[in-house]
Each structure stands twice: as structure tokens, then as C-alpha cells.
Length: 413
Image 1 (cartoon, helix red, strand yellow):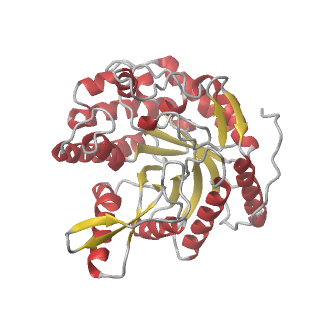
Image 2 (tube, one colour):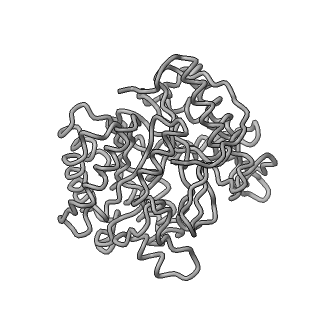
Image 3 (tube, helix red, strand yellow):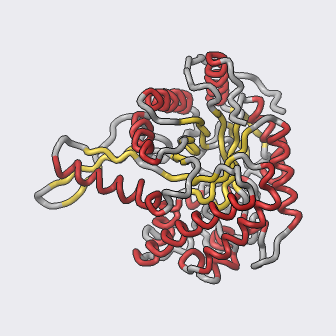
């Protein structure tokens, strides 16, 4: 329990539909610490120019404290991920202690009355899988299905929403085109193969989970960018539409019949313009507020992508939305603005049923290490002390007022 001072905050009115879910998220490798059996851990230790995740936020041991803190901050939903390499550290050999740990985590969430979103793959792979070629190999679809089967049997009675794969397009492009993430290959062919195998793995996981738990709700967390034309001219419009079709919708076109809901991860808006002489495509300069890592803060982009997501005809949950803001100077207005964007999208027919801020805790931000601070809760990595930021209490006040306005408890159970 947090016993520190509660910041004085300005309250904002937000009107959401009855049963709307409010919460935050984490992912295993970013917060748990000591995930020694996955490819990211090995990759970190092969380099001296990046942070090593190490103990991270020590969430593996402190999950009860962290979930209790989320509850005290008004959250009625929470997103976690399972670390595949803990559950299956060797091919076909499942670690029952790890499964029992995640069962305890989910039981704690149930005890606190929090709706659970559970992600099965959040960027990291068991080292044995990576050594066999990872997602470039079709056999990974089979391996993933075996892992999903075990998890569904052992944990299925406690999971409210299943997120099979987090941001497959981001994983495929960062690891196989931009070469920022392991295995750091530059191959469009490999990227294409990885993406197709991930789509096949999602479809297989969807069938497996529903076979074991017929009433399950299974979806994906799709990183979605608002691609807008920089100018009202045909070439800019064509570029924006092409980017939107490729990055936002192509993967979903491969998995369209296998979604009970759609998770939307939204962070920024992109505007590009086409120059004829010399021929090139340029990013439009953004002069408004930006996060600590230079991502533009433009809440209207969230409305744009939510309205585009209506085409899939399933409920939508914002499964990630946040910013790096170490001074906590922008986060309160960031949350307010993006929740207003959700309201506007709802008013125009988007069936949005929940908002999970990224993230609950400061965390290990992949190749950017511990520098970016995304947490509603500040983490002192030396002492592992948790300190909720002022914006966390702004978010709490928004949640309380939204729930009071509809007289609901925010539960879809």
C-alpha cells in the first residue's frame, strides 16, 4: 500500500458508456526482472552500449504491492503479459512453478475485482526458439500453439481477455527491417515471413483457446498510427492511405475472422508530404507538445484510428496509450485529451469499451533502456520504491467521476 502524500489535482469530467474499463498495463520482460531464458536477455548481454534489464522493476516479486496500488488508484482492469520463456524454458518442458506464479497473479487480480487482459507474446521469445530461427520458421506456429494450449488449460478459468500477440507489425519491422531489436536482420523477405507466421499463430491460438474455453474473448493488440495527409493534395492523400492500409490493416486482414475484440495501441500521428522536385517523401514538422523521446502528442489521432477500426465489427479496447514524461508535465492533459478522443469516437459509432494506460510502472523500454519514463507510478530502480505521480491521481479522479456519472462499477463480467 502507498502511504505517501496525495497530490492536489484538478478533476475533469469524462462521460463514458456504462461498464467502461479503466486501467493500465505492463509487460513481463519490461517489469518482472531476471527473465534469463529469453532472447532479449541474451541480446542485452551481448552488447555494452545498451542498458541491461536486470531486476527491472522487480514486479515478479512485488506484483501484489503493484496490483494493490493500481486498485487504490481506481483501476478496475489491468493488462499483463506471460513470459513464455519462464513457462517453457526448454522445448516441450513446462515449468509448473512459473505457471503457479501467474495463477497467483491472476487470482490476486480477481480478489481485487480487476478485469484481466493477458498477453501471450510481448516481443520476447524463449532462447531455444530464437536459436531455431524464431518467427522466421513455420515450426514456430506449432510451438506457439503448444504453449497456448498449456496456458489455456492451466490459467483459462482466470483470464477475462486473451491478447495473443502484441504489436506484430512493430516486432517484424524493428527486428527484421530497422535492425534495432534482436535478431537485428535487415531483410524484407524475412519480415514478410515473420508477419505471416505471426498471423497464422494468432489464428491457431484463437482456435485452441476457444476449443478449451468456448466463451473466451480472444483478440490482438495492434499498434495503430494515425496516418494523415500533410496537405490537401492527391499525392499526400495517397501516401497516407497506402501507409494506413499497409501498417494498420494488412495484418488484421490476415486474421480478420479470428477476433472477438480488437486491442488498439496508440501513441502518435504521422503526417508526410510528397515533394516532386527533388522527388522525396518528408515528415511534416510538428511544433506542438512532444514526449521525452520526441513522439508528438496529438489526441485527435486516437479518434481517427478508432473510427477506422469500426470496420472490423467487434468491440474495441485501447490496450496501450501513454508517453515518456519523466517530469510528469504532460501526462495529466495527455490522459484527459485521449479519453475525450474516445468519447468523440463513441459518439460517432466506435464501440470502445475500455482504456488501459501505458504503463502502470516505469519500465525497461527495450532498446531505449531505463531512460524513458512511461509510468503512472515512478520507480526508483536503486531502491525499488514506488511513488505515484500526480497524473495518476488525475486519472483516478477521472475514473471516479466517469463511473459516478453512469452509476456503474466498470465491470463487464
